[in-house]
Image (tube, rainbow, N blue to C red):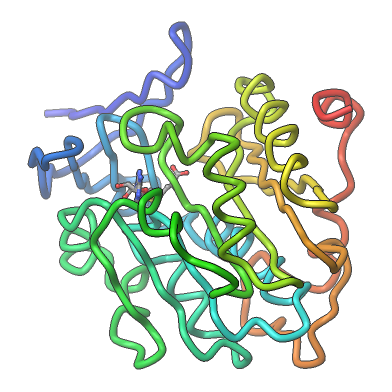
Length: 275
Ligand code: SAM
């Protein structure tokens, strides 16, 4: 028997993967959490039918959502991750030598449990003594924080359900207040091919709270369009430059000194989205 899972990435386009096993299908208070065994990508996590991460291409997204700011900031001691329930971003954060504490605020404990059970490499950072896990709404969590973090990473689901507010101007303003005077905010900002409107809005809204805003790109095969965008808001340092005196480049599979710089080189159609 052939079992195929399809994510409808747009109303008229889908990505289908052949699976051999359904390992988890459970509904939390927030979303349907599924883990399937695929032939092409190893295990795959889906939330409400939307692909979040897979064992074989996760390195691109998790290295790129974390290492750019970790190496652009000269001294990232305290890092906050909002969302990121699979733990991949946390693993990268606590693995950086400059980081003293990596706090992750994820709304849905079931995603964390699923990752600990089925994604051992993603979730290995949870056991690191620098890691702190809080199960709560990230929007509420940042509201009363003042200059508490050097970097904030928003590893969220798409702007639907509990993640809608994570794409709002109010949230970016709270994020700016919770960061130190040389802090940086990094958000996953969706697909340049299919979500130009989201990218435009995120860029504009982050610009209202941060003097420096830049967009960078990475290739993630299982995300819509295969090309993914990240937006950085920075209070002081240029995120395209490596400013950390102890930058970490090895061992990575996607991130490198060259990739850091080249990821900010944008094709004209992406430049047009944010101009
Ligand atoms: N890399 C993924 C992607 O772009 O497809 C996102 C990964 S991660 C699994 C996204 C997480 O954000 C989910 O586990 C979801 O529960 C969490 N999330 C959504 N809204 C949130 C909120 N308001 N506060 C904290 N976590 C939230």
